[in-house]
Amino acid sequence: MNKKKLLIVLSVIFILFAATGCQMPRDSEGNIVLITLDTTFQQMMDSEGFFSAIFVYPLSQFINFITPYTNVGIAILIVTVVVNGLVMLLTLKQNIQMQKMQQLQPEMMKIQRKYEGRTDQASKMRMAQETQNLYNKYHINPFSSFIGLFIQFPILIAMYNACQRAEAVAKGQFLGVSLELTPIEGVTSGQWIYIVFFVLMFAMQICSMMMPQWLQKRRAKMEAEKHHRAYHPTKNPMNSSMYVMMAIVLILAVSWPTAMTFYWMISSMVNIAKSVLVDIIANRKKEA
Image (cartoon, rainbow, N blue to C red; front, side, top):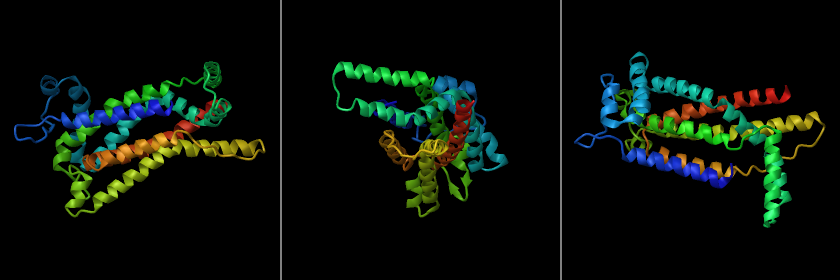
């Protein structure tokens, strides 16, 4: 996936989050309409439609149901792990493909350097053909990563809604603070633990985004040592796109509920574990 395509996808995510926040159902006094244990699926379907009933309602009720047995923070943690686990099962093949694409970056850059500065149509076609041959050699579909992204779109939006509309989040507390407040509101009220949540989320997000590269470099070093070659690290062209994504996440994170910050932190930790698992599976298949 090139930078332009990735930036388009990130822009869509940003627009969807912004649009979702603007369309949050509110009562006559302007308050967000909460989803309680008494709210029914049919009520959601009749009043708000398909998306809220199919995606937002189950997640909100899952949080509402678990919270009385633990607390709202643990409830969000459980929901996050379960949801990410299901998404991972649905997108495992795509994740393996993305991991393989990370490993192909050095070979991809060789092809790009080979045709660097050549703008004629023949060179462009030869470069495209060599790139496609590389994908075919390793049985990679470069567009498969889009499938995983589109599967996760509704989950992200639904969780964003659930973290604001679940009654357990609105009325509950975790470590003595309300997860309904945004980090900015929390810090303004003098509760600095909101900064701790924000910093932890930021750290876990960076680790989550960089983990595939770290694993790829580790594998490359091991491969070089195995064949008694010197390891020469290569610059990853996706880094700038990841920085853009991180900036978007940070901009959103300061103004969304801390429940969503907590969800994003746990989700990033799950993604770190997923990256390690996918790396093991992908390389086991490669070695087989």
